[in-house]
Image (cartoon, rainbow, N blue to C red):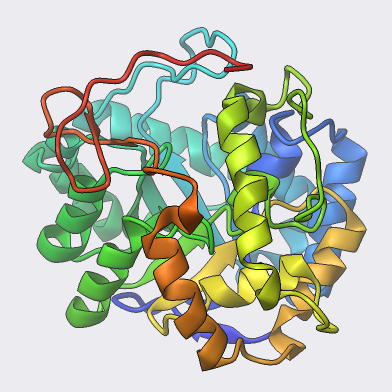
Length: 357
């Protein structure tokens, strides 16, 4: 394993981190508690020191499971958790819970997270999928500064999301707040993180990324020859809400980028992680890991060859053309008026899609 400093902080993290949502929710398949604890401990044994969770994962369980696995390693690991959702509110399927950013709520949420994590400090306390107006609240920032002064958190950051887009939030985090941001970034989903990477590099603000395997399209399960007639995901899996045209287009994209993987000793999943870590400002990436085999595979990424520049040069125009599958899907936006923008950042209307479309 290799390690990088998360710029704009004094934290050093493993290049491959562990997204605890994969063992605390059923959104990526069923993982029971014993399996989850074993996976977390195995990850530590393979050199992973960065563990990213949230209070809303399993309504607190995503924090409770960490000390069950790694309480004796607390001083050796970096723990990130998130705040902003009212986890006592009911949740319907994969819909978002209500968000609350009031100072008293934030401080109370932090105290509850400390209790569940069985620790007296949080290394990285992150806004969870905030909208722009939430980031602009001075009283929320003041509450976070109070928590820092009290030693309850070391740093705060922003997890931008929940899905592709949210450029305004990412740029405000980097350029105005100047605190680290968690972004979505992969071979198949580079925009708008690529704009944030450029800004973060200029500002010296750290980034870390999630879903480097593009919701499973780059973990090796699917190939250029895969044929999909129906969604392969169980209804409990959050990817079941991906539309069929997205799945089929992803296979078409894999056909276009097979040159990145063909004839190499490295796996598709390893090359996907390697790509995510190309920007020096990207301190860590958080692949979804639900098996010992995946942990072994992804933590070995540090040992594989760099992606040749000639292949990256070949990839760039393909991505710019959306791999020849038509206009990219709209992205979420807080300032467009419609809630969505096209690939040129123009406001667009978009009806709510349902599974299977």
